[in-house]
Image 1 (cartoon, helix red, strand yellow):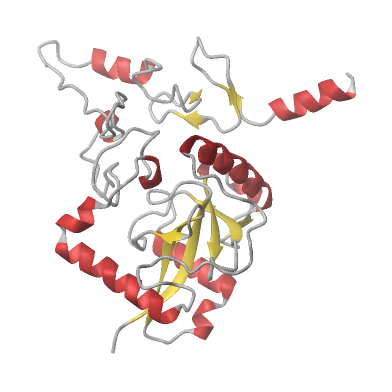
Image 2 (cartoon, one colour):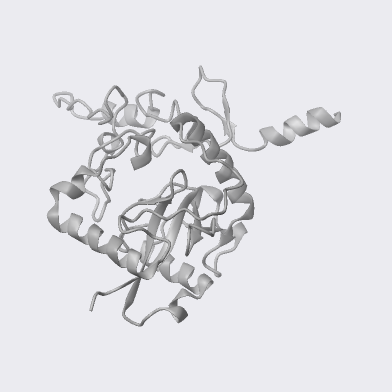
Amino acid sequence: MNGADSQTSSILDIGDQCAFIDCHQHDFLPISCPHCHAKFCSTHIIPDIHSCSAIAQLEAGRDEGRVGLPRERCALSGCTNPSMESVVIDKSTENRVPALCPRCGMAFCITHRFPESHQCDGKLAAKDPERKAREDNAHLLLAKNFPNLGPSGSIVKPSVVRSTKIPTDPVKLGKYNAIQLMKMKTTALPADPKDKSASVSPQDRTYVKITTDPAVDPGKAYWLRRSIITGRAVDLFASHTNLRTSIADDSTIVLIPVSLADLSLGPPLRNDLTLSAQVTDGATLLLAPLTSSP
């Protein structure tokens, strides 16, 4: 085997080929179907598109006289894929987190599930006065504690020019994020010192970058188990950054999503939900203290 063949073989060792019979794409970041557990590319991960055998078997076992309801489609205009919430087989599971956008509360497909992918306008917060009040208060407290944060929650840009320009086009941004995630997976450290790389498979990990000041610090990469609760993740990240030693005793530490395209902030994550249910792999999160107003 010559050098070129060896290099090609090494590249193909990353990822897997899409399991859809008519797709010949080798995906570097394949997604496992939660029903049949086969690995697909982002185009064929939707159960309806790859004619999921697991769902077909379940539907075949239903009572003959039972008529199934039509599946809800993705809420994004023009998208005909079924929403993630519509393909959940058992919705009675206790403490199950609905597959809805945390900002607008709408149901989207796996491609458009994150706020930035469906140009979320956050109407859920506008319809819920209590939720909007909490988010507004959080941004005011952030502005009070961080000089680099503006009153609206946006980050004041530093005078230093970024070495890498982040694309704003959704397609180019998706490719950029995929490459950054691959790089992150090679450098990320376990947030929990009890975890070892060999004991947790890559499929069971959530990868994030943590920063305490996104205007000047791009963040450090960590991985955690996908089952970890956000509150526990906050404690682990705080111990790595020594944040608790430099804040008031009455401060509550939260994680806040940061959009690297424009350095804008999302609403603080809920500490009672799993981290993997609230962020996508490769997300950058601001670890910030919120001090109660006097």
